Image (tube, rainbow, N blue to C red; front, side, top):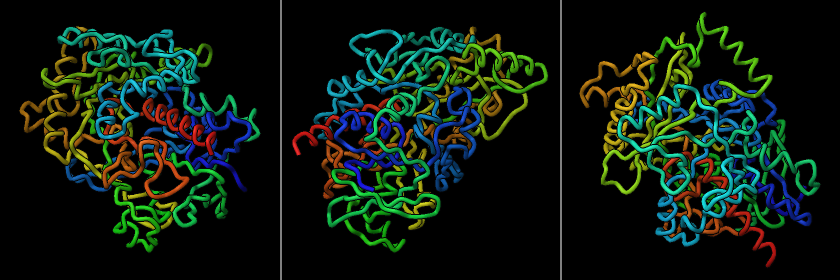
Length: 531
């Protein structure tokens, strides 16, 4: 089979690319996804994320290498394995990051990636519940809404104000700092993934778009220094697809460098031990992995309005399910992490360095450790960690997971920032608005000194699933793609996903990934027009 463009990965970026490129009926597009169709009801019911997160259901569920900064435990990295990718299993929070994050990209030599340059592409995708303004658009396919907040979310916000923080009505607006409710990619009570937003409305209407699920990409086919196709494995058999114009790699911060290395593109020291011939030496592939280290404060509560399982709360669970089935409202329509904060651990900082997520349930070890009863949780994450990790190979078999080492809390400065953030979260939660929930800290109630609390953090911290940077854009020796996302030294090959981010953004990364795809699609179409 032959197409103009082959997109590898039908995730947050891939679905956007498929939509934009196939809008031209003269262009043929193939969208490949290793996972199944997104038919699971757990995907589309927002609270279903609690069941997907700890399992392998539509989830790659990667483990990391032993993390020295986390007392040598294995970290956990859920990633979407279905149409919509991680936008089909994430927390649905729509955050762009701080405006200066993109100015940082520009300062690194990526001249078309400053905040003023990228803002129109955020607005292009968006259908914002609050109407059009200088920061938001209403003509896009991606519905961005605000939830009906649980009482504890409202009280958390009030507690933040009581603790001296400002209220922020729009974290994606003029200012990021403060405490408030999150915007979410939920529409009429259902998850609004990029598959729902960009793929489903056009999939059956455009004969020039071919979507293939259950197709594991084995390698990118090269003719010298030119990408000409993709080898895929489907139902145990391999076959080749040809690309007349470009191969677009959108497999994510783990999948994209993994596939490049399997294709002979990357650092020789990673390829040679697996018997892979080096077809193009590119030392930055898989390097520069950055992720947000995160720790959760877990609380028990006698309040059965909080999500959980108990005899007294079972009737409420049934009533809530009925409410959702009939009206698509209530706790089942919630992403659970309805509110939070962006705060500075030092008032002299120019932008927030920690983020909080308040959760209307007792969350422990990515929901892999379940507790009887009800509770509340608060995430704290470091927005710009100093620790840097990598992605490498453990096998030449594409079905074997890559080696993932985010090096979480590898730098002492990250631990100290997380420690300060933890104490700030404790200060908020002890304020009067939260008293009615009678919260009981499960793990850190007796950790009074910095040393004791640091041990709790190292024992319980992990990722909050925002990996970036492993195919970073730029012009330095470790850059993998240029500012138009073309792979250095290889024709007709681009990487379009969060792996190209040269630095982490201050917040959840899904919105930024969608923006990257919008930006790339325009450049691809411009190149198509002048070819």
